[in-house]
Amino acid sequence: MARINDNYLKLQAGYLFPEISRRVSEFTTANPDAQVIRLGIGDVTKPLVPAVLKAFHEGVDDMAQGVSFHGYGPEQGYDWLSQVIIDKAYKPLGVELKTSEVFISDGSKCDSANILDIFDLGNKVAIGDPVYPVYNDTNVMVGRSGQADDKGYYEGLVYMPCTEENGFAPAFPSEKVDVIYLCFPNNPTGTVASKEQLKAWVDYAIESDAVILFDAAYEAFITETDIPHSIYEIEGAKQCAIEFRSFSKTAGFTGVRCGLTVVPEELMGTTESGEKYSFNKLWNRRQCTKFNGVSYPVQKAAAAVYSDEGWAQVKEVIDYYMENARIIREGLSAAGIECFGGVNAPYIWLKTPEGMTSWDFFDKLLNECFVVGTPGSGFGPSGEGYFRLSAFGDRANVETAVERIRQKWGK
Ligand code: MLT
Image (tube, rainbow, N blue to C red; front, side, top):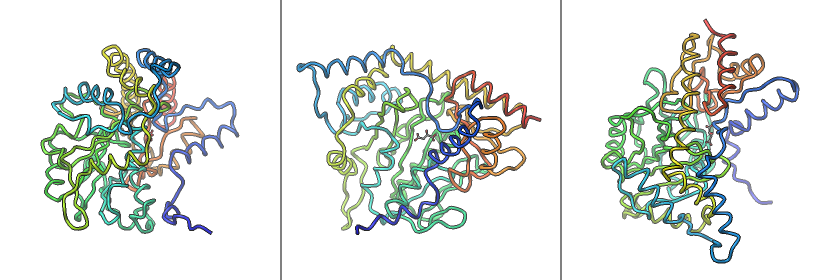
């Protein structure tokens, strides 16, 4: 019989969001009349904006005629999409990129997992705690860790606690590492890094020959003008960082699937014999072998996000979600619940009332308020005692959820 990948058995629980769905569906089956409000997984609720839909339709129509039909596209994505992203999303930040450094994909979740293909298993990896579970679990899956201890920390991985005491900003790892995951605006805490903080990380990575995997999936939700949107706004970052971006939350593509990864040509690693080698070349090789590109109509739709009309419409939706974030943050804070994030990110990270554990609060919130959120401990041991609410809901639902929580726990 074929051997399984035993590393999967080290994973302690099912993936967080399916586990939440399981509990919610158990509850709704038992309580079919309950008006459940879902502020758990960060899934968008607003439809695609008209300019994007129009381009999407045109892309599909192109596929209906021989002259405009598209078969396999470039594995790296069409140059016209990479170029519009460079011109509209990076140039205004003062960041120059080549199309050969931008790889279009079916989303940043997949990319942030698949990127491990181009790193040797012997690399030491540092991740935040709490953290987007994909970073931790994929390192366990590929065999970079031992077993988890009773707190949930996996042997062999280096954790950087993000707590109220350090303002949810990870401290430099306590030992030499080769790969560092950073996510700003942060999922799950909703906090951001200033230019000075990112500069310190870039300097640290260069000095210690480490690569930063920078997840910028939520950059479009930054409202404060002095917060960096890209790690490449920091001098030297092209030598030490790979950046992931996503159309999922920015433009409502969670069900459409499109994202991108930037791998600068100057980013080098070393071979077994100590010679320098380009990560860009490796990622290109990986994508050409394992990926056949994003569908043409989806790339047409993605390009339309950056048209003047498209961006104005997308921005309106982002503002709508950020107004939800304000309503949650201010409403709960006024009720005496301590809240973080929600200013430059669509997530509010709150301290569970009455010192409840994250999962106890999840169950109480579901059973007594019919509101679904995400337990902080699902993102790592340092998330215990915290809870994440997503701002991607419908306005009326968000207001009702805040009111129900205030009535139950408000002071
Ligand atoms: C989340 O809720 O953390 C995200 O929706 C998950 C994801 O983007 O994969």
